Length: 188
Image (cartoon, rainbow, N blue to C red):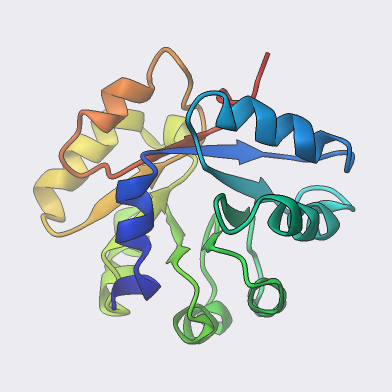
C-alpha cells in the first residue's frame, strides 16, 4: 500500500490545516474553527514544547471522527512517538536516510517533504509517489509544480508554505496536486 495509504487520506481531505499550538486551551478552539468549516483533519506541528501533549489531547477528545496528523517530523524518534500515539498521518519537511525505513514500517500514512528534482527522484527510488512540496512559495510555487508535472508524470503533491486563501485554488487546480496545506484555515 503506497505510503501506508496516504492517497486515500489526501483525497478525503484536500485542505490540510497546518496548526502550531502554543497552549492546550487552543485545542478546543482549533477543533471548533475547523469543524465549523466542514474540515475534519489537522496537522499539528512539532514547533512548541507542548506539541506532543496537544496531539495526544486532540486525539483523545476528537478522534477517530477527526484525523490528527503530526507535522515537522525530523527524526526516527518523532516517527516512533507518532506510532505510540496512534496518529492518523505524518508530514515531514524533508527526509533523512534514517527516517526512510521508519516511515514505511510505521503503518501510518506519511508525506515526505521535497522541493528539488533530486529529492523527488530519491523518493521515487524508495517506491513513493506522493510528496509534500515545501516550502512551495520559496521553490517556485504552482509554476514549479506545473513543470514537475511534465517531468514526474506519476507523482502527486501536497504543497505547503505560502499557501493562503487567495492562492490555494490555483494549486488545487493542478493535475498533480492532491491536497494543499496551510495555516490560513485557522487564522482570524
